[in-house]
Image 1 (cartoon, rainbow, N blue to C red):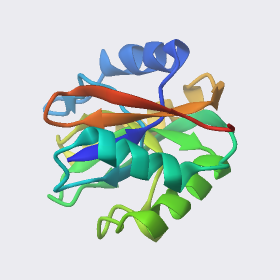
Image 2: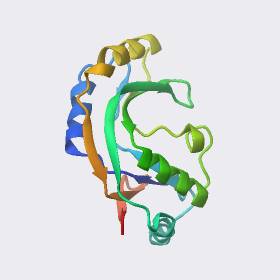
Image 3: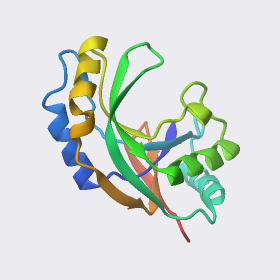
Image 4: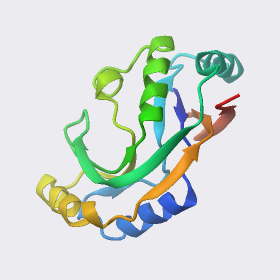
Length: 168
């Protein structure tokens, strides 16, 4: 499985690390921070061909603004809570919609259900997670940045295998 991810600025990583020091019990912190824009190439084996398809799908797409806007929670497909930084970005949502036309959306988490976010942690007592969200939602300093490229991320290798610039 591959995904197209927006790079996360250091300032947002710092916010995540600070919040993760106070996660509720049994809420497993996310060690690799990602901002997934679209999952692509589930059966693909040649990342160079997949990168070319992604470049075609992104052709002419502009850079876009993104902003960490608070702390939120949603239920994962396994039923457990996912605590995350909410990312406001009409541009990322537009990129996601365009990519859903080129690559089939993953049911339940993509298409109209897509939520741009950076996961803080997964699991734990839902009530404790909700209290954490309520405590920190208005307390997070906003972080703003421009997404100027996307990374083609290999789940197998757990690293980016290509960088795809936007606005070119």
